Length: 168
Image (cartoon, rainbow, N blue to C red):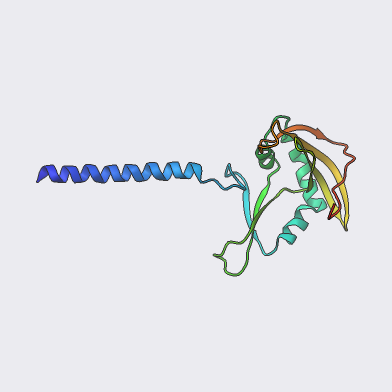
């Protein structure tokens, strides 16, 4: 009798241990694709247009300018998003429990341009009444166009490029 209860206790401990390992391993692999490091702020909005308007305002650009000092060549795009304090926004439709589409916003980010398959430029500034003013650009590069491993190449503090017109 004692032997049977000992085996049952060992089996129960093995089950608990297996559950703990499974939970910890699954947690490591189930990352939010918009926040893979779990370091970004998350918010809920009624419409993405509101969030976009706020993040492209002059005030948002002024908030983000001091954060540029944290960006260094060689940083990954995820590192830059963390340094620039990106926000993951969920658009709420209907019930509070019902999660809608999600997007990532960075204060002052007006647009991204892809001059080549190996280079990408993030244009920061603000949109004032339909007139966009670009204040600085973070340029990224990658070695392989098949992979999304972008790293900071340089920071352009006096850019001459603009965001493309819609449909361009």
